[in-house]
Length: 269
Image: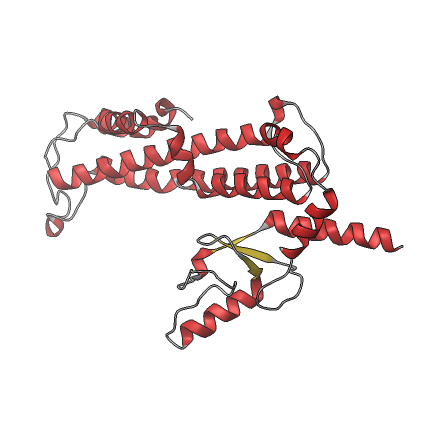
């Protein structure tokens, strides 16, 4: 995504530049309330642009699911089709779109505050603000993208469940007993609340512990109904104020549990 196509929505502002506009024009009773006509169009465009965020989010979900499928089936693909690469590109698009939306919103606020009779060059205003945000880009920005961070964590965890490691760590894992890896992994399959193997595991973003979704949701709701804080049920955990927003689906663990159970059923037949 580049700034030029997106900035085309501000052509209305350029065409209107130099024309005068009076607050409340066409609606005297609305003086001090009405936006520039061009700025009103920009607000409408801003709402439409936000729909692109859901498209990027869906793309990231798909790329993440495919990446986990590749690990699960231990399928190798060329770097050209790497899901890691796809996720980085999605994260970059998401960052750029967020910068653009911030620039547009900042421009709208500027127009509201200035309330000048002359309609400003909206495209130029947005472009300046957008470029200022883009100039601050860094790789560290990706750590603020929740889906990207979740993808990296789940990919790493699923590889661990299968006894796989990233290339840079491969040398340090030589000689590791695969049975020991499986045994250690199985202990992560048990919910600390139900003490049963999980079917729909969710992870706590704050402390990293996992639970059966239905059990932890019921526990948090019960505590909050009684105006009490919900503590993480994992023994020794210091997280004492759990919220529903802390929970995310642990797709990697769910897949690992299902794979383990399939393997166990095959061995028993």
